[in-house]
Image (cartoon, rainbow, N blue to C red; front, side):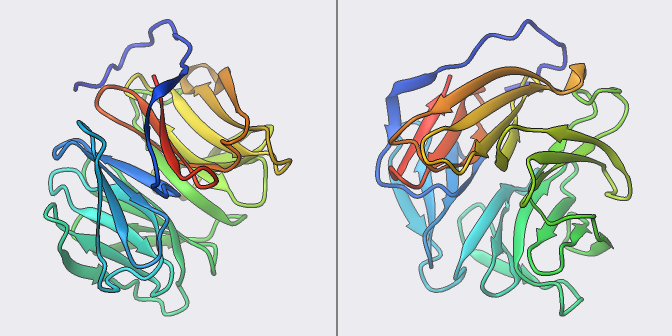
Length: 277
């Protein structure tokens, strides 16, 4: 499905109560458009695959190929599945047939516990680190490009295409703060902080839909009032909609957008994958 680069009137989203995937841990999730499937992490020693058509679930990487999988993304052109392994301190690369081809070991031995990952349109990708609070950029082939140390610990990250950015001139990187109620807006090379988005809750994950709207899952740490927040980046990240998630949606986490522009979100408490239409 083609990306809509024009700013249309926003239509409020709602949860599809009849569509969900039971018994799946989707702590982090990515959509593989070529193979029409979701790739979800949340279990130790395995990664889940959910078929988009029938929502049937299977697993791979069962032979300790990825001990503690965290964030995941799909690389453009190659359709490789890039998975952060928090146990081994690696980024594991699986091909479209779900076979482990190689692992990327950042050259600095202190750079461990990769947490967040996302690919740009050209296949380059950025990785955040838990232990040393770094953001590291890699070429599409896995060659390290640069490493920067932000002011605070960042976790989930997402590229915002320049067509959707406030200036419409440069691709940006949106980074969720682990210990703050905000999102940092960084330049693509991570060298400059462009803006800061204040939130009511602590950001967990982030995605950008096909119309350029930003969706953030936020945790208020009060048990029952986590929320999904829709932002308009072309209007100064104005809040367009907040969707409060009551029990059993107590621990909403991973987010991704499919080719129908639905937002899939995971919930560890109920063990389900749900959808915003």
